[in-house]
Structures are given as C-alpha cells and as structure tokens.
Length: 373
Image (cartoon, rainbow, N blue to C red; front, side, top):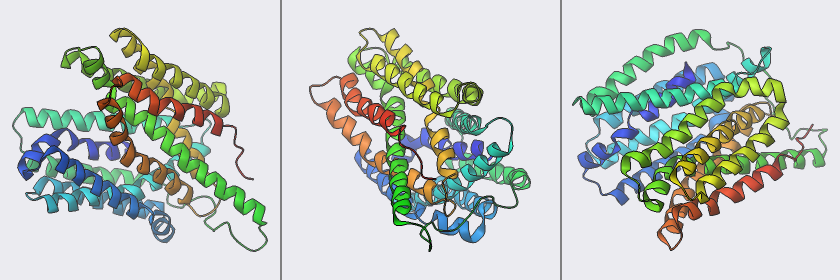
C-alpha cells in the first residue's frame, strides 16, 4: 500500500502541470526552473534521512513524513503564486527522501523473511500507483474538477490509507544501526565500504539515466525522427511502461529461478539491446519493440539496487541515501543534456544513445565489483 501511495502522490499533479503553469502565469522555462529548484531542495534535505530514521525508526518516520508529503500536495493544490507552489512542491520532495528510504528498508526486511523475494513487486506497485494517480488526474481535468478539489480529495484518501499502512508496518527495525568507522575496523575495510557507497551512487545515476531518458524521450524519438502523429508517438512511452510493469511483476519469480547476479547482468544486456534498437532502428514499429524490451530489462535495476543498499552494513539508510543522491543528481543534469544533443544535428535516437549506452556499459562493469564483507 505504501509503495502504491508514494507513486500516486506525484502522479496526482504532474499531468496537470500545464494547468498549474497557466494559473501561476509562468513560462515553460520558468516552470522548469521552479521544478529544478524544488528537486535541488529535496536532494539536499534527503541527506538528513539516516538521522531522522535513526531517531524515529522507520515506521514512525514513514508515517510522519507521508503526512508531510500530503500537506505539500494540498499546498500545491491551493497555490496561486509561484512561491507557494515551490513551498508545496519542495515539501513533497523533502519528505519523499525519508519515505523512500524507510519503505525500502522495510520492504527489504520483509523480503528477507520470506521464502521468495518481493522487492520487484513492491516497485511494480509503485508503478501502478503512478498509473492510477495519472489516470485520476487526467479524468479530473477532463471532467472539469478543479485542481484544488482533486488534490485535497486525493490527500484525504491517501491519509486514510495510512491507517492501514501503519498497522502493517514492522514495529521494530531490523539489522544494525551503528557507523562503520569504529575502533578495531581496519582502514582498508573502511575504504572498501566507502568505495561501495560511491558505486551505489554511480549505479543509481546510471539506472536513473536509462529509465528517465527512455520514458521522457520515447515520444520525441517517434515524432521527431519518423514524423509520426502525436497519438502514435505516445505509444513509445506506453511500450516502455508496459515493459517496466511486466518486468517488475515477474522479476521476483525470475530472481528465484536465475539468481541475483545472473538476473541483473542479463537484465543489463537485455536493456542495452532494447535501447540500441530503440535508438537506431529504421522503422517506428521496431522502435516500439526496442522500448518494450528496454523496459523489461530496466525494470529490475532499482529494486535490485534498493535491496542491496538496504542490506549494506552500517547505519540504516546511509547507503540508500547515497543511492538516491546519485540518481537525484543525474535527474538534474540528464534532461538538459539530451535536449542540447537533440537540438543539434543529431537525431533524437542518436542523442539518447550517446547518453544511455555508455551507462549500460558502465553498469555492466560495476556488477563485477564485490561488496565488502
């Protein structure tokens, strides 16, 4: 339920950003600046996630910060000035840093208790939450429901869901919660763990890059490079999303069959093939097939990385914060990078390939890095 709620919060207002822009009287570049500032504030605030979780525990931190997210959602719905919108948007992202870490810690502990893993399906529920939230926002807009009414209603419903969530969460946190740099730990081991934290951050950046570029630029690949209709171009995003959903719903079963390392490396190879086909295929139908294949491969990246980070030795949430920070930093850079490349003489397909394929190669190389004992 919590993964579903977290996905639904963001999707509840993102489809109505054009309406928000008009209400606030902003240009596209001004709106983009507001979103970037909010994302940066959220990134900085998320650094406090381990300290908050250490003080409150994952259960209390998750419940309290979800309420903070929902308050931010209401503020976005009520905002009539850019400053108020920025406050609400930043509040959502600030709280999300803690919620994301806490719910993935609990998910990883639950997965370890069971005979079969669940992290892929949990992330699949997050994806379903984004679909539900997006469809709800689109339907509300089409029916003439005001943004204010819609977001307040969503916040109330999701707040009520917290009653169910709170009852189901683990009451006691598992694992250790002490810093690694203690007496008796040899410097070599400490350095190895710092290296692995950096590897997690870089891996998060790679995973976010291939996922973000595929979802955000699939439609442009079809409309700009093949001059397809807007309706057909939207199928690029649909194909990628379907692949992601299939991969996450069946990823846990494949993990049991293939094992962790084989599944992850196979997924990287599969996503590389899909991205290459999507970027260079000479026919639009092949491009759709490429995005579908890429979605299946990419789907297991973040569930795997979040589970690894949750199991990392040391204070709870530190490794997850490094992972999130790496992906958040890339989210500030990648859209502009692809846009600049696509605006040059390159095709959209070539621009996306220049950004994503090196990430796949680097990602594959990082899978051979052994974690510290």
